[in-house]
Image 1: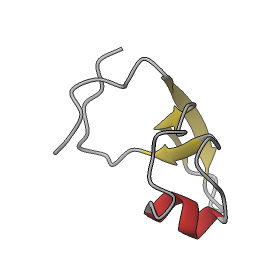
Image 2: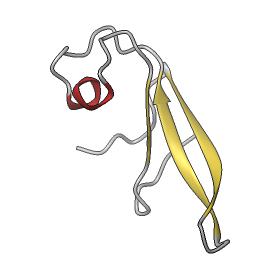
Image 3: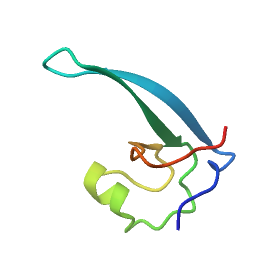
Image 4: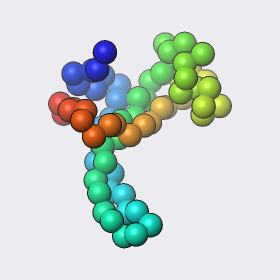
Length: 68
């Protein structure tokens, strides 16, 4: 289920990106700053080799709307 807005312990940022061919885009990212209550088997921790409590940041899909 998509989140209508980021949790209060998260930060949304616009990140400028430049492709190898020079194409410029602006992408939205979200950083979840307090993950202490997340399951230690959460996919993010598995791929990042991290533990609950570590910040988790990721880019948002093109069609996702974020209220800030």
